[in-house]
Length: 337
Image (cartoon, rainbow, N blue to C red; front, side, top):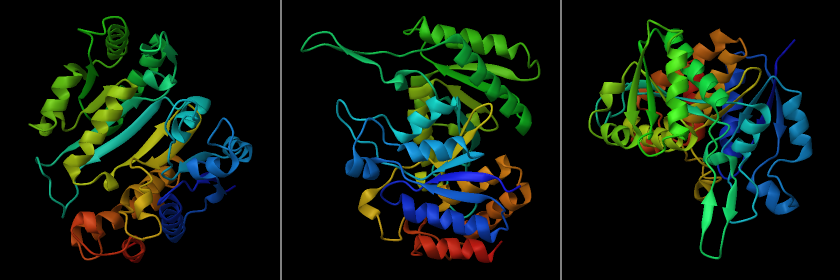
């Protein structure tokens, strides 16, 4: 039977990019069935409520084999709902947010070619969204760290290193200041490492990693970078600059029985409807989803076709030095399948 994918079209440029992703996936010969869903600020502004995700979308998610989430807008301010991505990660226990960071042939590598993977714990940390107002002037945000969550995301990072044939996992922390929370994170990383004698565990302070990424990022090549929720959220955004554009960064949120795939960038509402935004992150997130669902040949075909179009540079968007529209670039990818 065909696998079912719940597709959240998203806000801003989300609907047009997810449409292009589905076009590329179908052109590759995929058998997945797409179930298009609503979620995000646009839906919430019309309907209100305590969630950015309607009940019918939750139902579609629970009945699907995977989720694809286009870029969504998260409203700010006290009392507004938590983001679509955070809600789905917590609901389905998608504890490993994974972003490959790899240079592309044909594009500049500002600080040298890079090839590593960022793994971020996706269910706790500051993203539990628990804040307390003590007085009119004092507010506290709770950073929740648990040993089981640290242990399972560390295990994912070591397994990812094994899958890729790499020899190192880099645990990123601030345990000299956050002695209990990051102390527990490091301890669990050390315990997991004992089960992987062929893989080294390196430890770096988060501020040092931020510096090294703009000084000598190649020291992390062929390594898996691992950290807690907020630290890696920030660092992986920094890493996107190393390959030239966040429009190239695709990501997955993986749990033990479900996964959500998405581009790493936001909804860019000022570009909505302009057919301008780089479609690569969205298309490759869809290709990765096919691999997860067992359609490995179709997945590989999309990756190879996309890399060829980027290398040729004849049909790329403005952020890659070209003048092609989003749809024109995806058409070129399809021609190369």
